[in-house]
Image (cartoon, helix red, strand yellow):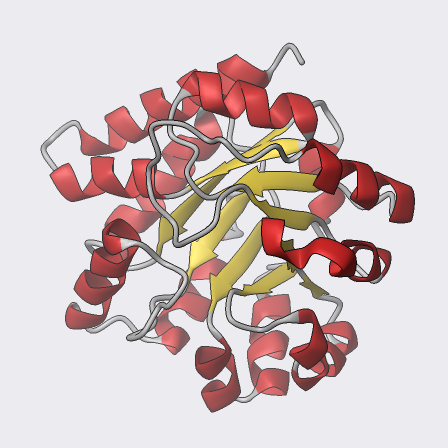
Amino acid sequence: MIELSQAFGHGKAFIPFITCGDPDLETTGKIIREAVRNGADLIELGIPFSDPTAEGPVIMEADRRALAGGVTTDDILFFAKELRKDVKVPMIFMTYANVVYSYGPDRFCEKAAEADVRGLLLCDVPYEEKQDFLPACEKHGISLISMIAPTSENRIGMIAKEAQGFIYIVSSLGVTGVRKSITTDISPMVDVIRKNTNVPCAVGFGISTPEQARKMASLSDGAIVGSAIIKIIDAGGPDMVKKVGEYVKSMKDAISDL
């Protein structure tokens, strides 16, 4: 069993998000393995959804392409199990409540555990509604990942106290996507988190450059990047997998000495 804590056991963690099935699962597998070879500490496996309300246009289009290609939740659960044969970093699933609810939370978590996927992040499930999924997660040893955003305000401590695995800090208001600059001061959020839990926290939403990753990781336990990687995948080309690896290495190098 590969625990989520492994990702944070050797300094700051770099966490790439990759949409499964964009452009196809075989390519997704190559991308994930290349990311791990180049320093990815934990992989967020995105299960595409038809109405991904937290996503900007880049990841939304990736979801659309994956679904148009016919990928299913069953396909991705099997794919994750195959990945685990040689991918030895922690993995989590990131998706939406409807995907898990329609599959059946207990059945979904059982299959995820069989693939040694140890975390689940549901973008549209707030703290107050997590009981719809928490029992199934706990039954199968899966951490239900909490998100904390600038709008969480007086709920931050409450969410942090019950957090599992790691906390996903949302750096900016709005949806996912590359941002030229991240103006939110996340330090107050991190301070409250630190006072209420020892669970690690990593920052996502908008990070695209090594400089941004370094800044966010210096304030937390790691950096999460999705849209910038999906853009490389969308551009395609014969060197696409290699380019993803080079990008991951540049981001990991930027935070490795913190």
